[in-house]
Image (tube, rainbow, N blue to C red; front, side):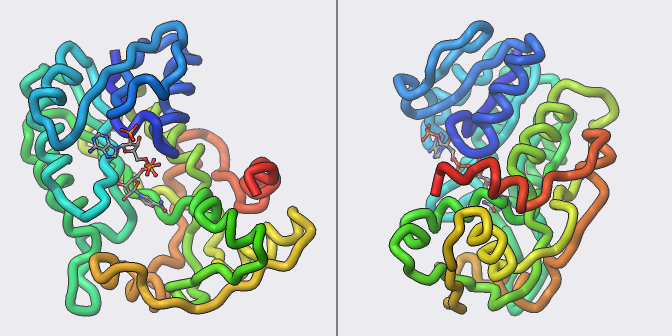
Length: 267
Ligand SMILES: NC(=O)c1ccc[n+]([C@@H]2O[C@H](COP(=O)([O-])OP(=O)(O)OC[C@H]3O[C@@H](n4cnc5c(N)ncnc54)[C@H](OP(=O)(O)O)[C@@H]3O)[C@@H](O)[C@H]2O)c1
């Protein structure tokens, strides 16, 4: 049985579907179990990263754990608490969703410092581990659905820089493979789409798909906590594509155009 944390989110939701489709029993963790539809092979557990006792109950008896944390304010506490619970519960492996650039020193800061602390704790935990470092999700475009509808320009904090934007469904498929397949212990995978692409280019493609113009304007970083990562991306360091998705899934990663075509209705 696999415990999926962040199970109602972008990546976790799809991992749950993929595992159930393969007949793998899943325990989905959420703070709001009533929001999760019942399914064969699916158990839903109420737990909160800020409540260690609830994490121990969630991890009890799990063979593997998918660790997805998304704190509103960056903190490694959630990762550390879940790793402790996974160890106490006797998990056979933990797959952590991290982020590209984690640990790079740039512009006077450390990128993704809270993810870095989580990665380090996992490596030191004695548990078999796999770390996934995806690039920017194509689905971040959904944050702009209202602005796109109302014709408001969308904000580009990286000022036209290209990034290896990845379809989150590819990230989920790699996570499912890392949770169930062989040969992923102590592996760190950097997950990108097939080509670096700027937000302006994404807006052009999505605009073609939707049949409307989408304006983009340069904007400051949304929060000081992300400043180092945004400066790193703005200066071109995230214009990176890797072969990890194709190597792990046996097919090329999805393009942004395909993601846009398949999510037309969400806009
Ligand atoms: N977006 C990107 O471009 C990008 C790129 C690289 C890496 N990442 C990484 O991806 C991760 C986010 O994944 P995602 O986008 O799939 O998540 P998401 O869609 O933002 O969903 C967040 C999930 O976390 C759960 N959650 C939030 N606070 C919680 C708490 N206190 N206790 C228990 N569960 C809690 C939520 O569950 P409930 O509300 O149901 O409890 C929800 O399932 C982050 O670590 C981020 O750094 C993102």
